[in-house]
Image (cartoon, rainbow, N blue to C red; front, side):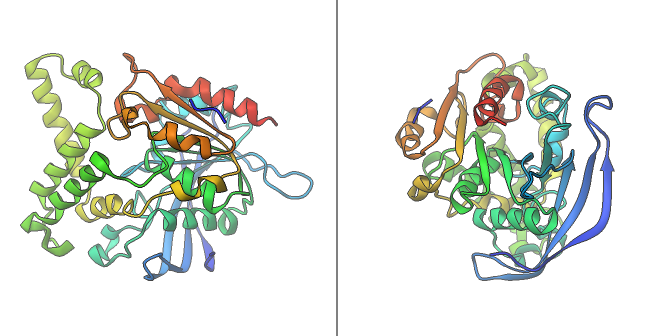
Length: 360
């Protein structure tokens, strides 16, 4: 140790091809939808058809016994989608020819989690009557999508950012023999407490206490509540260095903030955002860390105030992970607080070392 229930399912026929990151290096991403019939949530609620959207790049390869050996699944953070990983700053650093997750070598899977992106979510019509999903539900749905939709029976790697990183820990405990390697970026394998929990409560309360929310049946977005929620989220997931570069003068900072707030409020639905933050309510993999048999590389950054290193939680918990290693990235001009999780230019060399350690 170094410290540094499946449901009946069907695949929808419609496929969408998205542009390649680099036409010369990366095959085009294929988009598709997968529906799980009569999905039962941990709350006991049942959805007759639960849709999961996903993107894939590359081709699965099986060994002589039919086991897929090159599948890599990458999981997004709260409020995100798998599409974000197709950016030049993420996929452009990882998926190209000769890069650590070369799409000519690996079968890359980028799902939208329940409640996010093009997957089933409250804003599709059920609003506050949508089942109150949690992280276990999200991971079980991902597993069903892989096995019954994509016929992927093994994963070489699960890499996740923020919420996706927390899903990595859940994957390691829920399906210990299904994956070889886990790389959670910006997370702690313990229940969400302290300032992190209070931030989430503030976000949820800001939305629900806005009179315009109307118990989720609003006809106009609860603007004041969303402004409060977005303000909290921006402050907690940012870094002073990045913000000062974006707004180096008083007027520039005011204009940058005005633009950011307008864009982020417009991009989010109140019910979707409320559900996304509520889904972490019972997350706590700490009792079962000994169940994780996959090799695991946890990476956090020193300027991340969502997972502040001064709490010492990773040093306490990581010794219980049999094949685990923890790296704390120092604060630099390049790190971006919690958002460092989406910058493989900073942590990619550690991922490359980890993949070499996993071997062929």
